Amino acid sequence: MIITGGGTGIGRALAHGYAEEHDVLVVGRTESTLHETATGYDNIHVLAADITDHGSAELVVKTAQRALGRVDVLINNAATAAPAPLEHVEPAAAESQMAVNLLAPIFLTQAALDALAENRGTVLNMSSSGASGGRAWPGFSVYGATKVALEFLTRTWALELAPRGIRVVAIAAGVVESGMGVRMGSTPEQYRAFLADIATRTPAGRVGRPAELAWWARQLTAPEAEYATGSVVVVDGGLSLM
Ligand SMILES: NC(=O)c1ccc[n+]([C@@H]2O[C@H](COP(=O)([O-])OP(=O)(O)OC[C@H]3O[C@@H](n4cnc5c(N)ncnc54)[C@H](OP(=O)(O)O)[C@@H]3O)[C@@H](O)[C@H]2O)c1
Image (cartoon, rainbow, N blue to C red):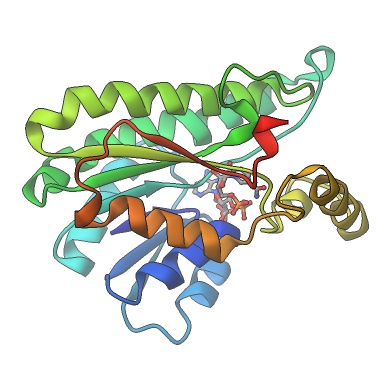
């Protein structure tokens, strides 16, 4: 199975969860963090690649086939966020969010289709409940738009790919303590304050943990889940109901 963004946060937790019973290829740009994910796991393989580069989709799939022998699950987990209100959205930041969060999953999934079809495989797209269900999200218009689009792709691909035996599902995660805020530019103190504030506004009374996202992912991609396709499962402690 392939996990993009497997060097950090939720992607690392996904890799460790799946490694209990799968051979895993983690993909990201930073070789050191990918190797940290793989440390202690013989069955986690790494590929340092920018998923927005021309030809990287084919490289990822070929590397997975060579290292793992098959591709049964593809998790489009890598993403980038550059929050800004509309008047401050910069072209490079908007293009990068579109490229990583939306175009790369399109072409990676396309490149993996034959390999997935051989195994009646599953595509899992990692979305955000901040964008689900007709919501608005000031400051996150571009990031949220990529996630809305990813959910639309999930439903549409589910229909297009059902005849090939491929399922397509998504998780719309709430706020998860993954370190993403710091990678987006917040200081550790700002990120801690943000998480504490979200926890008080979340019906479950806390933010999410990367390992519980990994648990949900494994349920959704398990063979027993084969009747679910096109499903977007919200895992956010009830935050999006508020
Ligand atoms: N954390 C949350 O609260 C939250 C909430 C809802 C949804 N999500 C979603 O969950 C997923 C994982 O997020 P996270 O919280 O774990 O954040 P994260 O730790 O920042 O993960 C993002 C990953 O994407 C990789 N990546 C970024 N650009 C890339 C590129 N061009 N090519 C290859 N890899 C690239 C990064 O690795 P490199 O920088 O090394 O490339 C990083 O490992 C994302 O889809 C995010 O939108 C997160």
